[in-house]
Image (cartoon, rainbow, N blue to C red; front, side, top):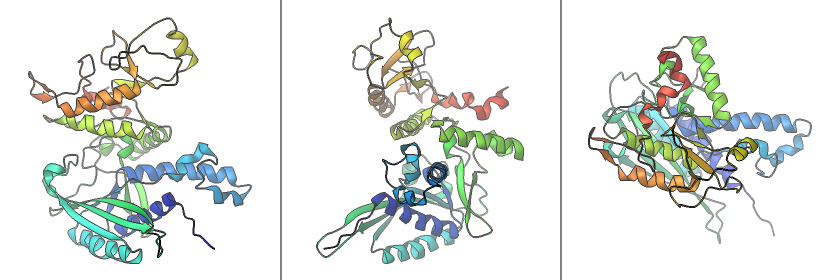
Length: 362
């Protein structure tokens, strides 16, 4: 009796790769997490290749997460795909031809729905774009007696509605430094990854060499799990959107946001010794902070004169509630996001502490 064994993550990556290439061929611009994840996965694949170059048979362990965990991010798989089309005809070819051919070939199902502008809250393209959510469902390994493993592919498709609209994602409204990159079709009908021309940061006006220097720094920081929050949009609900974006990044549990008013505490010997004879209580669960146990800790930096340390899980729970409260400052009529001691996180000014803006401020 024979059986078929497949790796679900490998299949999902392959499926997204087909759709990505089809979209780029139709002049689509890929942006967001898929680009970030490809940069990280490609880097780790290169390290993995170096590790096994003396024994190429070990390549069969590429998807084995227990093998060479130092490069485990080589197996990164996108959660979804964000694509932007400047031309509606190109978008329709992608949706009506490429996606339809894909689901016929792999026996999938697709649904396409329009998202109202009010629901496209986190896109800055606003009324100039149509936003479509595309969901593809497939079953892998289906047989007569087995329904197969269900996988779902999610595509957010933005389509320009204006004539000669010159902008590209993130449309001058970047959120994190790791999301400043796009995938675009090149002259060889392949694709390149580059910095967007419309980041909304000083990068957009820098000379080639200065821009390249910062690009390499952004990538290096990202590969080491460090990102900066750089969204600088001013509006009444800016802090609600900022908090939402930051919460989404925190929940990935892969990156430290280095320029906001909270930080993960690394329990080095020096830190543990420094706090050996001091006691503090978590504002949320009211239990004593123990630097010797394995629980992750966060330090709140909204008041430089008073330490505020809490358990990371407690902080995440609190932060989620604080975002959804949409607390309004009665003096400014603006939504604010505050720490447990009611000091503002002031995320809208975080960009001022980014290395991208330091030279401009100086």
